Length: 114
Image 1 (cartoon, rainbow, N blue to C red):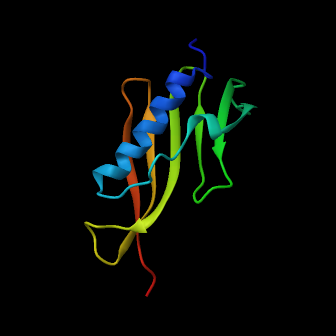
Image 2: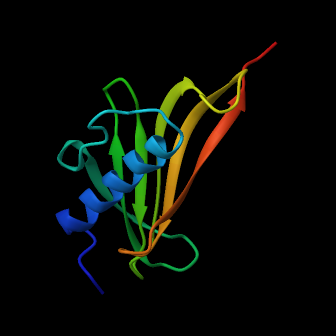
């Protein structure tokens, strides 16, 4: 099993989150910053496998990344900006998932309330 705390993997996840925002035409600047994450170990109640959860809190945005024992990751980071491609909507967050080098992603786009 690869080291779940490998900073190269953590920074790759952060870069992938930034790229997902950029694909939509919005910027989250240099956020998230891997070294700013707090990390804790969690044991899955069903599989009993160890996962590491990184959290970003205390800045303008927050987010999290869960690194699973098999090397997969799921990460989400707030954007909270108007969506340039869908009037009347905003980009709530961006997400990435998968294995290192094969991260895929998407955005959560929400309509502004009436």
